[in-house]
Image (tube, rainbow, N blue to C red; front, side, top):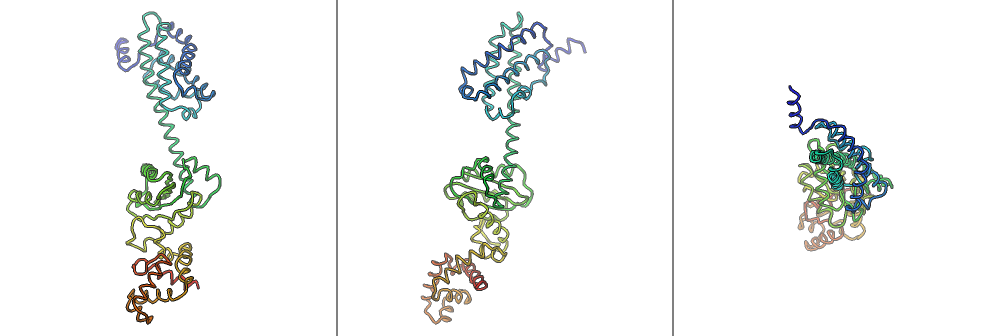
Length: 397
């Protein structure tokens, strides 16, 4: 290939032959002047730059100077693969990408380009000012794309770190580690701490990927003011917090948790008590198989009999304190009537005959039982809860 042919290929690829030493010398001598002019423009035009700390402004000055120097090096020996914003930003600490946004960085690039354009006539050798201006524009365009890539990688790294921190926080919540470090870690994930907290658990039929967790996390944050998502093997944990009806928010997410059972734990005061809701929800998840027709999602408190049969101590204490205890506390024939009604196959007439009372008396007592315990014996499911409560009470007596 002839030299002329090679140069034409380089031009087609976006490169150009090395420039004369005089042009490079003049550009290098003008580096400090260009940097100073760029920083003055930044201070005059950009309010966000003026509001930065002095240290951050000094770092931006180094970035601007590094960018101008990188352009000169490229201009001296141009190659299509040397557009690299990572090299320009290497002079500054990684934290700078948190102090200034991508939009701010692009504004910085634009102003530096304008400053160089304004000085092309005095920097360029005679007759070369247009070529220098075109080179600046081409280089700045590629640096802008490269800067976007730098910010994308930084965002990806922060997202991966946040996901790992979130997994650790959810695991700590399940274990009940409510120390000060947990509070700070939850706050670092954006948890505001306003309102109550609720935990919902489910299972998946196959391993879950990161995109599933990301989609679920976004949906959870739309459903409630605060949200955390944990993936533990085939188990999915969603922690919701905030004001309003958290159960409604949890129910709206059930369809995203796969076809398996979904259990919602009780509402607790704040995130430091989330382990209580999680413990009850997980106990319900372990016991829900005993109720094949359970709704989806199902409240853990609706799984009291199954949880008792599975050996859940929380469920046992609940039926003793909230169901059997109140029946004993009111005295009278309520407990006797309930036992007779359940043993008689929920027949009013058979119960009335066995107790030697009128059927209307049985109806009245059943309404009293519902008022005292919150469970209606005439409903098949709620009657089953009452029957288990009586058995647990008798065994514990």
